[in-house]
Amino acid sequence: MTSLSEAAISVLATNDATQKCRLTRALAADWHQGRITAIGDCPPPPRPARPARPALLPPREMPKRAYGGDKGRIGLLHALAHIELNAIDLAWDIVARFPNDAMPKAFYDDWVQVALDEAVHFEMLVDLLARLGAAYGDLPAHDGLWQAAEKTADDLAARLVVVPMTLEARGLDTTPATMAKLAANGDTLTPPALELIYRDEITHVAAGVRWFTHLAEARGQDAKALYQSLLTARFPGGLKSPFNHDARARAGFARDWYEPMATR
Image (cartoon, rainbow, N blue to C red; front, side):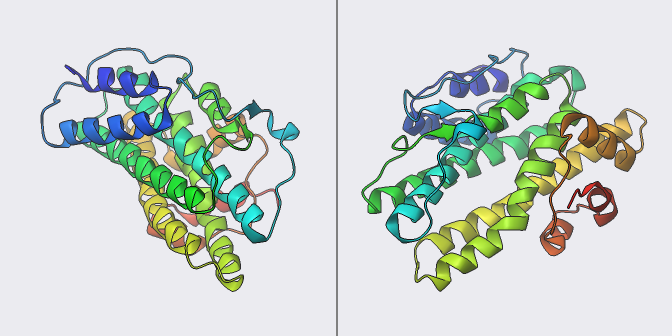
């Protein structure tokens, strides 16, 4: 690869999930170890390549998830694996999609690391599915995450608001309760995996906040006002409370930014 954007596109063009993870690991190493140095300017595809399975349904058509027992665990793990696979592509997409914003190298360092983290998460969840006799693709999944990417493909600031600062931040709010419920039901395997994802999500949200603030300042705009304006325009459903204020604070996400945006 001659540039990071070409590397990103090679991942986005890979439809096999296992190969997508392997390629992410190899290209992240190439970037971090200096074998790739140029950012490049190669526009990414509108959508990443996807495996034939799972079937992608509109969110409203998704079957109700089972709770309890192995069936419930499989449903949860499959949904999380689908999120992580999308997250790999979202991280590579942000690397290649916004060259006109002229972000510093540290921005690309962060998002290549996010892509690598998400690949590790996906592989870990697939391993847990296999222990239960299941595989990624066995259940349908929805396309909501990539729809959010499509709606923010025109503006890096909007992408940062919707993806890391809203969708990933929501994971900070909900994951501790999920871990506690699984542990109470005697699950000793899933909570440690969710704990790793949770810790990494804090760093991902922090990257979103950091680079959004950088971008707002570069544009000469008040960061909090811009965040609230973009959230209203690009995520009109608003935010769900309660919030995990402690985890959000660890990510540098100021309470007076997001709390007024709660709908309930």
